[in-house]
Figure 1 (cartoon, rainbow over the protein chains, first blue to last red):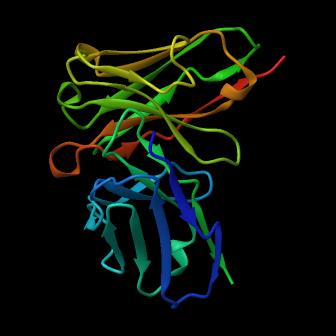
Figure 2: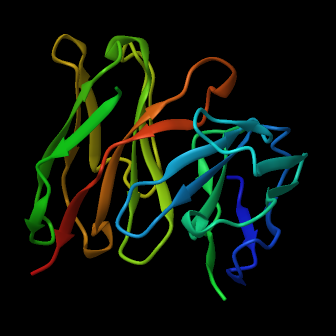
Length: 108
Length: 121
């Protein structure tokens, strides 16, 4: 099973700041990685797939990069609606499809 | 508009059973693989099961294998999860999730609102 590890667990950020979230895989997942955003009381929403392709409706301030075992989600200028928990997920080697434990982005 | 609406969650005693469903609309249900993903209270996301569009391929997470059964009815655009031998640690919100196709295959592109299952005596 591929274990996904996200860092940091929590990030305190002011609106307008640049945000970088990390995701590491225990073995190579090539570029088969997705990012999701979850707000309190809501279901997760697909943001990015195949490492760097924005899903329909994902603002351009979100970008993804990486390959193999190291991945990054960057928010170029954090907006108020971007606060929540972000999860990475690998789908290179499944079952199972595995998620990271999440990074909570909160208001500083 | 793609919609996935779960129903049938609730309170069940340890060792009990529960079956819930997901009604799909806004897309050709029979063209997509479907999944169940759960989230324990205050915890992260856990994929638990997948069924292919034609039901020929089914996968389970080790944590539910032998206890849960995924199924689908393409004629009625419905996905099901039958849960037996429930444990306290199965307490979670269960999401019905569509598997993406094409270049995004492997990711989860649409999620239901979730249904809460509480296993407690």
